[in-house]
Every structure is written in structure tokens, then in C-alpha cells.
Image 1 (cartoon, rainbow, N blue to C red):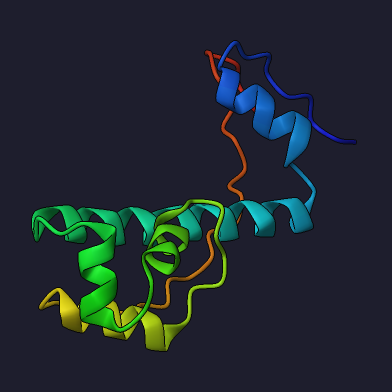
Image 2: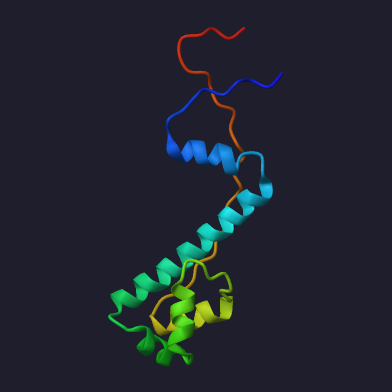
Length: 117
């Protein structure tokens, strides 16, 4: 018997349950999208700290401003390690790569003062 979930008003929880829970392919796509967003945001932040335009960074890296624009776009998923290395070098930074264990969904503890037999 499948335990009944507690009702929620948390919008993110509702969306997760409706569109992602029990759908490993969707969860994998969500994780890829989060990674693309994070990479783009980091490139943008480094560039802004260096007070460079996309065109100026592109010149330092040896590419075009449109490539830098695409790399900073959250929807772009073609980040290559060699391009990221070139950008990091141009911005006096280095790339750190970590492998993090995938978290498994935890069983939710019942709320309230109900005794569990």
C-alpha cells in the first residue's frame, strides 16, 4: 500500500509532485538546466567583476561576442571544457570540477503527534 502524501500549499512542492516526482528523465533534464544556468551566471559574474563587455571578453578569449552571449544564456547547453578554460584564463580564474553524489529522495516523516506502529 502506498502511503498517502500530506496536502501542501507550497507551490514548488506542488509543481515538483505534478511534473517531476517519479519521472527520472524530467529530473535529469532539470538538473542539466540548473547546471547550464549556473555556468552562465558564473561567466557573467566574472565578466562583470572584471568590468568587461562581452565583446572585450571575446577578444581576450579569441572568439566572438555572440559566443560569449550564448555561453551566458541559461538555455545554452553546449559548454565545452576547453572554452570554459579559455574564459577562466582570460579572467585570471581557474575551473574547479567536483563530483557530488546524487541525493536519493528521502522518505518523509509523518507530521503531527501520530504514533507509528
